Image 1 (cartoon, rainbow, N blue to C red):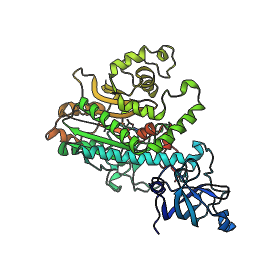
Image 2 (image 1 turned 45 degrees about the horizontal axis):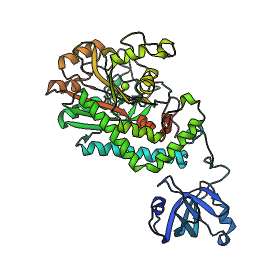
Image 3 (image 1 turned 90 degrees about the vertical axis):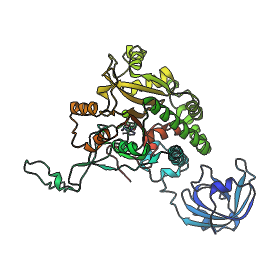
Image 4 (image 1 turned 60 degrees about the vertical axis):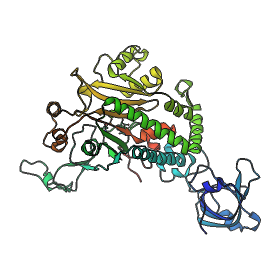
Amino acid sequence: MRHTKVKDLLNSTTTLQEINAKGWVRTFRNNQFIALNDGSTINNIQCVVDFENTPDETLKRITTGAAVSVTGTLIESKGAGQKYEIQVAKLEILGDSDPEKFPMQPKKHSLEFLRENAHLRVRTNAFGAIMRVRSVLSYAVHSYFQQKGFVYVNTPIITGADAEGAGEMFQVTSLPLDNLPKNEEGAIDYKKDFFGKHTNLTVSGQLEGETFAMALGQIYTFGPTFRAENSNTSRHLAEFWMIEPEVAFNNLDDNMDLAEDFIQYVIKYTMEKCADDLKFLEGRLLEEEKSKPQAERSEMALLEKLNFVLENNFKRVSYTEAIDILRDSTPNKKKKFQYIINEWGADLQSEHERYLVEKHFKCPVILFDYPANIKAFYMRLNEDGKTVRAMDILFPGIGEIVGGSQREERFDVLVEKMKALGIDEEELWWYLDTRRFGSAVHSGFGLGFERLVLFVTGMTNIRDVIAFPRTPQNAEF
Ligand code: 4AD
Ligand code: MG
């Protein structure tokens, strides 16, 4: 007999004869009531065991974590809290779980403990909810771009170009590390490596994405990216997923419009599809915040915060305006910032970004027109000769969630910029070809997917919104 998903049973509009459910025991109370979860929903279904006619041996094996199959009828529940429950006629233990050893006990565990058990943490309410929300968010990403006619491009994960300058890279090699081949100059001979050259894991699909945008018009990538920065923060992963749309003929304003519309769409879509999970996560966050001092608690509950993002335009502010605000801010004057803002040209740290979003504007902010020398080589130079058409989107509680720009479409300006930064023109010959043959204004951005999941779930550590986080000194599982 085929089993029915718990979600479908709970959503049933009638009682049902002869149904089967399979899942994992969350709790077993009074030798009678199983709270069964199968991952299809945050809600458990109550299964009432006929304990008088079930052998003691079997009852003992109904422990938290065990996999069971229950066959019976779906009846209206007499208990509070659920409409339906399963009156169990036949119970089968599919897989035992040693109650002494199973780490996911029905009690509160610390997030640190759960991280060490990332293979089992998904059996908790919070992680089940986070992973379902993450899945729906990814679907929403595709849905948004597909509806708009964007072409999904899979850019390479192994790359021979390491000029993006987005961070430290992980090298990919099949050379024997204990016996490296050397060339005549005594340096490592990468001609003998697998690809005949030095290669890395990609930090971004943008440069390849641009070549496709200059043919297909509107494209997006959605894939894993890798950065070997040794930044052990709650916002950085060494392996994270990025969404990078790139659009021909879009200028920076169009790029901002696209980013804002896109983010609002995926949040709205997820709120509609994941109401139960988000309600649970809102409660979890409220609970967590109780242990924090008043000043650190967020002013809005999770759903209110998500609605706020849907209903309000993102504030667009130039870098120059932002520097003025920061220079005159109380934490700057009182030297509360770790990095004091003294002059135009300073790179913004996450403390500054969060001040702008959380204290000053109190809404998502798009900062644009950054100084050229703190941004990547491919961004379009403004007429002032010192700023570029860059944009970063800053979110409350997160800081930077999007980084993007209008691209430098002028061949000569681009080459000059590359020369000044010591970027090898030969290596990026194919990228420069986009500016040689039919170059045009174009723009794009990168959204850090885990940072979006952080925002939507109200979690605070990026390690808790990806299945198996990769961070410095940690690649377990
Ligand atoms: O600002 P970034 O470095 O931009 C780029 O890579 C461009 N090539 C994007 C483009 O224009 N197509 O990264 C984009 C976003 C950041 O805003 C942030 O959300 C996320 O990627 N990000 C990270 N997320 C998790 N862990 C890390 N180590 C991240 N580094 C960047
Ligand atoms: Mg950035």
